[in-house]
Image (tube, rainbow, N blue to C red):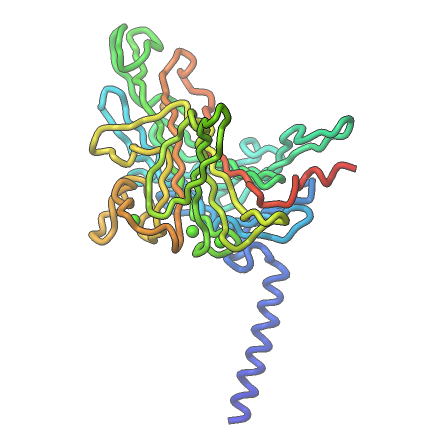
Length: 395
Ligand SMILES: [Ca+2]
Ligand SMILES: [Ca+2]
Ligand SMILES: [Ca+2]
Ligand SMILES: [Cu+2]
């Protein structure tokens, strides 16, 4: 009995030592992934970002366990998981309505191999010997100024490139030293679909007898925030600024149940994801604002594309609800965003689905190849710090 106990104790000590070693080599993401799948960067201003990545056929590259540490401050978990959850491309002549992520996939053979030329001054990250991710530290220019002293901003930028039909999509994940995140997708490659003739109201003449068909690119992200490492105490607030007595007054509404919401320029509408328990120095909840900064174009499609109805969705976390549309065929799981919304509470663990649309009207310059067009969303720290984390670097 005693010797068995001693043996177990010895094993326990050995494993503790082993875990200690792993932690030392890979403090990244606190063991949420092996070192081959971990990204940890300290930006020139001292801010640190850490995360894990993963490759799947449909989503391509997903990120998980995303944490940020301001130069002076503790490391804080922000996102449990972040992924591109659909790229929906309906054409104006209705000849095609693609669901690129679920039906074709951004991963596996569709992931292009990157090299030093496509990833200047960066480091290439390999998946089974194939360089699929480029990691760069990029200058952002002047971040802030106080009279004659200024601070330069930097960001960690991670991207992959997927070939889908004639298109090249470049999902990019940017992490700023001030805590901001920008998730975007670049589109380049070549136009996919054409019609003939010299005139058309579903496209644009781009060459002799050649009309490029107009279409939309509707992008959807699936963001599983778990602020401060716990999703059960996160909540969403919508804020509208309503004119009363000649001035604008802030109206706060906590979103209790699953819902889809639209941007509203008239009320400067915005949304924050906040933590019920963690507060900053003036007792404001630690939060991130979700900015749909490219809301100038919208697509609300036909009835069968009800998932296009809203600009942003908030749902209760469900493991099987992976894609904004064309979600698996399993009977027990809903098919798209419109049916994920079934009145459930947001109080347990919530998912945010921000979207943005780009209406692509072909032009002569889109042939033979298009220049990159970026579509994205922004996540901005809102009382995450006690004060501007980069202002302190001014001396
Ligand atoms: Ca969550
Ligand atoms: Ca939390
Ligand atoms: Ca639901
Ligand atoms: Cu396009």
